[in-house]
Image 1 (spheres, one colour):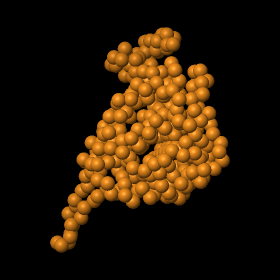
Image 2: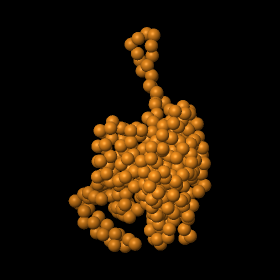
Image 3: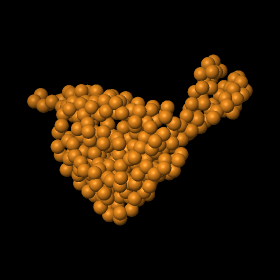
Image 4: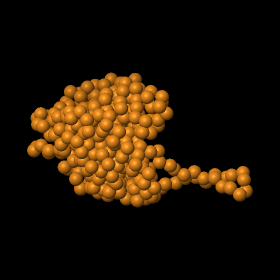
Length: 316
């Protein structure tokens, strides 16, 4: 497979692709199978983060007033672009982070499906009306945008997971500072280029590259970011949650799992065994939803274990 050259050392801030403001350091992005150099990406610092947050704050004043239906139409355009470039995105993702093509295609498809879902949500911007005890008043609820959202995503689903965070945030009228995993900057760059092409206005989404311990920590503590969404390890998530609690930020965490599959004595064993194999070893088990425990009814325990062992031995 011929390597796909990804973007150079650029962040995307206020609608412009630009080099970092401080430090000048960059990280090499290499194909894990061949060690081929795919690109260089910046190690952004506090000045870059401040600039991204300021752009998002400024854009929020107008973006929050765009009707939700129109925001949904931008996501619909994004879905169409993702669909038209599915194979190219999948191949570039495989080159960057090593997941096999059948799974990177699925990764892109999840982003496509998520875009379509949230495009439709723009027409379901519903509130409630509530009876009031005063004869000359009425009560209702309406949904309000939060503000600037800091989105931090991992390497193992470098398009699907960002889409789960970015699309609902945009649909709800929020603006974004997006930090992808340091080892999957290329996929994030291509995704933001598609969002830009879809019509997302300058400043509404800002992409900054850097490491979790430095840039990620600064994002969590930045006073201009009102919400943090983080997917990663439980240990790091505990630190993120404690900072958000202390700073009174909204916080969403998707962390490590200890996931059980329960197999009862009346189960279809063939289906149960296939489910266990995919659950445990799909994406080489490198996901928070991977099956790590199997709880089996005692009456079928030996048959199930023998079948599982036999199938695991045949895996390539």
